[in-house]
Image 1: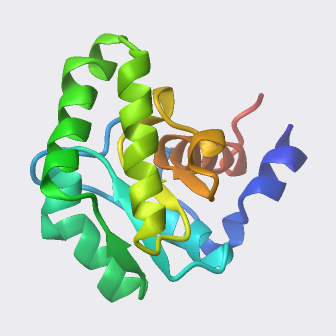
Image 2: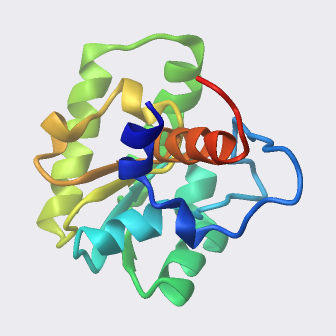
Length: 165
């Protein structure tokens, strides 16, 4: 298991922790977001332009987008206003309540296709619940599921600190 996880992420790029691992299970709020691993995956895939889906806060506030652009040199494209509202509503009114509605899946596919038509080489799923609605088979381009990426990193960090499987 350790060898398999080590192949997924290279822990050598992270400094050794000075304390036991702490996993923050929700990283998006109205004020703060922490995009610390998806940009590495986006660049490793050779992409320069990426679509960003998430809550309105993630898509509209500068914190996430500016960091992806300024720190990582990525061009970030978000959906138009009406689609941002729809994506936000689906997250909070459906997915957060465990409801997966086919019509919403179709809308997310349409939004992802629109991002692709606007030049995005892939899409960052910037909210933990979006993967319930949208996957690589829906986008026909690389999908960067931040929930999975962060979970993999947390598992590697724990294993590097002596946790057993």
